[in-house]
Length: 545
Ligand code: SF4
Image 1 (cartoon, rainbow, N blue to C red):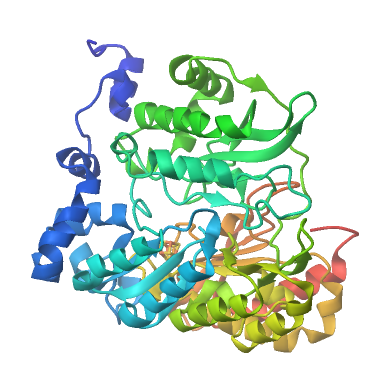
Image 2 (spheres, rainbow, N blue to C red; image 1 turned 60 degrees about the horizontal axis):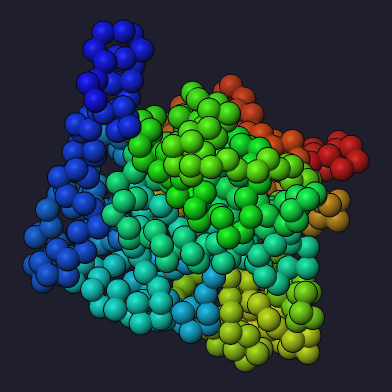
């Protein structure tokens, strides 16, 4: 194919770097790095070279690029304040320790896997473990010398870090109660399992324009509106249970809600349709500018009709069936508390604060879950943990055992609704502290808002980000807090937050409003949230969210 040279349209296409239009030459250093060497090849170098040679032996192109394909990022050097984040070179921010993410697609784990995750943290990660809102575990303080052994231990129980990060198909969100929820349209886990088996680690999909996030659920419990591709359970009037297909959602600095393609996909066709959508992204996605490289920009430019047509005509080679939209729920499901399964057993959802646990807690949860007769646990997209398959007679003991670990099954609304990203403790992009602040906020609100807790009949979510990225989904929270340096009353530059108010998913899905100049310092945060909540509870109308 001869690339068009002259028209403005041709210039725009060439500028976007879309492979399908013939533009294969890398247009930025990230694209160059991926073209120079398939990032999946870095595993052999870690095993054969870097684990023996130590941190200083690592090629910078692997360190700050290809390592991500195995869930590895350098963590932030301790003691660098947020005001300097943007001014330092990457190597000045790099510590010699790593953050590591382990895939657990759908958050699905056996108690044996949970125990191994905990033990690895105890041995190699200074007992750190955070449950992320991608339903997986993130460790810190990992040393390169230990990475091959950690992989061996993970793989012995069927776990992997492959494509946990990077421009690849990341961990797939799935309903934590797939297959057991009384009200699910259908169980999406078999589709997740097939996608993992067929495509994760497949070099055809290991060089995408950017990350690719998938959600598949027979319930509306996985924030489907903000995923690159999502399959949402819906009953078709003629064909029965299946999935409604969404594409092009995402947050970060240009938030967009996903678009329905109006197509109904039966369970056994989900992997093929997923392959078609990710192929469109790989081939037509914009590769010139990193900040325009997510699929949402392509979907926004094309519109859902054209996107569906390209999926069908060029990749699936057939038409998909039209289907109805799922009924919109008035609130996100978080599965906290004690809930009956369709087989008569119970699942018990508990709330750590903002996903912070530890290796020791994970080992203990595995133990007490087994004592309660369970062999399955789940992480949720809200950074919570669920024990499945509990007989009714064991529920009471399990609840008190979880509470002793700081995992409350009947949490306050604040503990239940809080999420926080990694923040300045470990993240090189962070400007402010998040996890400790979330804990402090929950403790203060629990102490100060006892008098109105009965009036909080709708959940109030507070999400805290350490920078303008949106790892903790701030735009979809009732109160979203974006970390930045702000000026306090004395004129000092201090840690604080830009406030976004009134975001949400499901009914009236939309992004929180960013009010001009509406910023709080970190020190003022508990009092600010308390005021907002008190005013909301006092003034809300029936069912108002
Ligand atoms: Fe790091 Fe920013 Fe993401 Fe928080 S939101 S984890 S600070 S990149």
